[in-house]
Length: 415
Image (cartoon, rainbow, N blue to C red; front, side, top):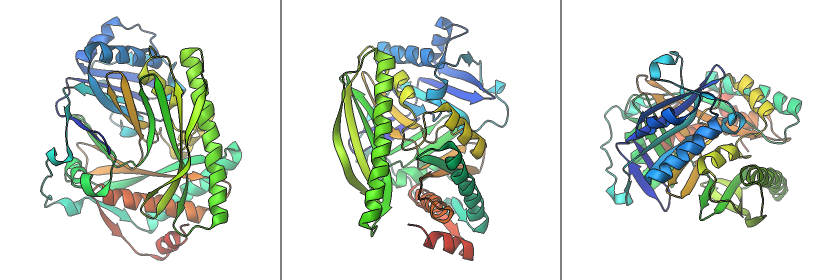
């Protein structure tokens, strides 16, 4: 099942008739399909690329007039030309498979448009206190080591804005769906939930990314994060960083439109450094619109645009360096969640999420920070820890904090 939740759209699919998963393992892309969408395998070729498969899936959704939701993974743009291999079932994947290997996950079927009052809010589980995030010295030290290595990597790559993410374990014994549903109305305005027979993922992401409809493509960018009380000098520096990320986004959109359409008709800046807030945390936001050719696959175009410059680099050598540092692919984190209705597509950046294999008590929460020239180990460590704590609270987890010296020092040093 899946549930899509924004300020304007609340849609769910409780019993998908078709599911598709594309995962990456040991450098190979594997496809698993169930339901009607599995018939696409019969019309593919042994050398079909990821981009070719996404185009065929997109045409199939339009032909069947189906709505679908899913995940586009962080590494999708780097492997669009890589061939895919169809599997008969999950058994061919090794036991160590995890959510960080998800490249594409999609479910289609009968959908319902709902009002917020129609969603049933479950009673608080008597085991809810067992859903917890433990924040202690060991966690802070591990994140600090990763941050220090990330800052060194940024200098080596000469990358203006390098996003590094830490995987943080969460005890998740009660239903993740129940915890997520309880927070929908009061605690976050945009979210996505998806579950399969093997895993479940809940997100309270605050950021939009791409929307495509009526031959118009709109992209949004949130970059340049600051807290209340930040000085004017610091805000001006953050605006400069935001504008650099905005130039990267503009160049990305132009390149993708040229590749996909063979033409580019120009791009319009519609939102210029607007300030949006999530409590005490503020971001600078910009948005662009441009035209695209309507016979080009929406899913393929989305894969080419992913990841956003705000969450990671499009350059494959930078993605490889990030993977080497973090120890595994990003998978769903830093990519996007999408809602694909006939002729339209909208997305949310896939951050602020918890992923759990259904047979395991330990889930993973991934929190990241963007490193720039002024970043410090203490400041970025604190940002990652604070983001993890806020995300856990929004997604129904108890924070078990061990108030030790190094933890307090990290949190106090947050900007």
